[in-house]
Length: 176
Image 1: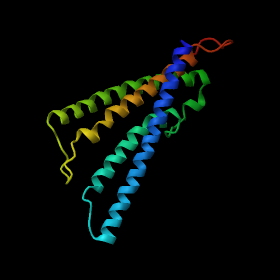
Image 2 (image 1 turned 90 degrees about the vertical axis):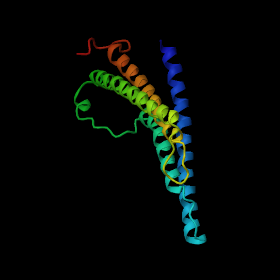
Image 3 (image 1 turned 180 degrees about the vertical axis):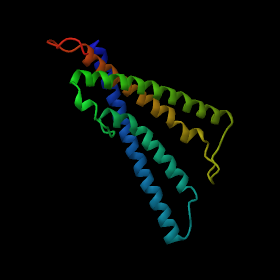
Image 4 (image 1 turned 45 degrees about the horizontal axis):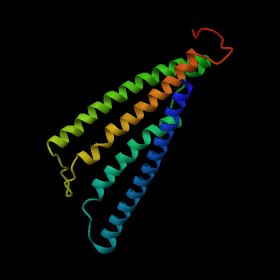
């Protein structure tokens, strides 16, 4: 079981690292698009007409790609009022349960956003902006990001529950 969890953990770390790099690339694209628009408007007197729309898409992609890595690295904001007042094993138990519930919630969000993408595909929906971008393109990151976040929550939940319920040698007995 340890080896299986290690393989999953390494796989998630690799995927999260790739996602962070892609998020960074979208941040750079945002910078380039905004500066090209500013340069075009104020120096050459023209607008690309797509900058606002595409920068918004890049921002959404950057954000959804960053969720899993942010969670995995413990960088989401947290309020630890309860966790600071209980034993480490009870803390692991509570965090494990919360992570599994969160994984399920992310799974529901992945399904629902996937349905949105499917409907956009079936109806050939396009943006109302000048570019008329097929909405499948900007929307497709939502289910992808939610699946990745669900997997990280699931991984963390399993590891926390395992730590709480199956302590290493010399555990101090039952959790509660």
